[in-house]
Amino acid sequence: MTDINNAKTNIETTGFLDIDVDINIDLFAEIENLKKKKNAIILAHYYQEPDIQDVADFIGDSLGLAQQAEKTQADIIVFAGVHFMAETAKILNPTKKVLLPDLKAGCSLSDSAPPALFKIFKEKHPDHLVITYINCSAGMKALSDIICTSSNAEKIIESLPKKQKIIFAPDKNLGAYLNKKTGRNMVLWNGACMVHEIFSLEKILRLKIRHPQAQVIAHPECEDAVLAVADYIGSTTGLLKYSQQSSSQEFIVVTETGILHQMQKESPYKTFIPAPPNNSCACNDCPHMKLNTLEKLYLCMEYEQPEIIMEENLRIAAKKPIERMLEISKKYGL
Ligand code: 13P
Ligand code: SF4
Image 1 (cartoon, rainbow, N blue to C red):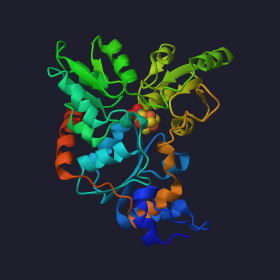
Image 2 (image 1 turned 135 degrees about the vertical axis):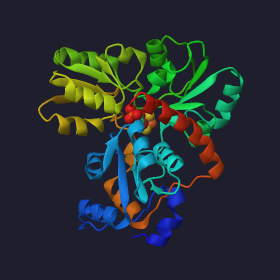
Image 3 (image 1 turned 60 degrees about the vertical axis):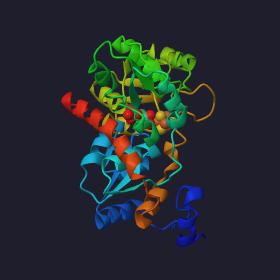
């Protein structure tokens, strides 16, 4: 068994505290104790595993999580999500200790936009304003004018004059969807999410034949052909609300499978069918989100590591466009 000092030293390589957890421990009870003892709050994204969602104080989409992170009075923010989300929490609330159960919980979409390359791209479009999806690094945020999420992107774009030229990064699928919705012609960075690009249109259409009453509900990170067959398109919170409010009893859910836990909890008598990927893998599970486990969550709360540390100049530069997003969202009651 690895001892705690070795585990702390190795965290750069492992991404998490690699220590065995006593099998007899009630992790749910221990995590509750640690929350009280340390004045800690657990913020979890809908794509986290069900056990993590069940111990969280707040479960939400990227916008909801950022808003909670900004206003919390807790001393420690335990972020059960991916790195860019925890980083956003630190940017907004720097005096808090922000913990991420596994530092290697990254994001393929964020990785598809390296700041150094984006800077060159941006320089080629000097008269454009940069709207960047929150799924990106702090370095990318620092190069942006306004950040957006899938729940406020449309409103943010529409808050700008029609003739304003815009670069949208990093998600080309979300960007194309927004171009259609708003009638703009934003220049798109060529990035994508590995999970939302894997869904099979053919398999979704086959499912529709077997479940003719089912509504297809999809996240806007999906490809255009998939979105074209959706009855509703929205952020994870949007999808959850729609599934609650719709009179439909059956849904084919085209996003990461973690969201099904809350959908089923909120509407126990409705049927939720995860949309299948285009091969036999479990690729509709985000491998990054699923790096966090209940054991890693417990260990990071007990030993207060891994922690998000940021260089202050970068934090300040990245904060500006997030604040613009939060101001516009507030104006629209989002
Ligand atoms: P939202 O939860 O904001 O809809 O984003 C989905 C996502 O891909 C997060 O990584
Ligand atoms: Fe990133 Fe896609 Fe995973 Fe969301 S689902 S964290 S966009 S890789």
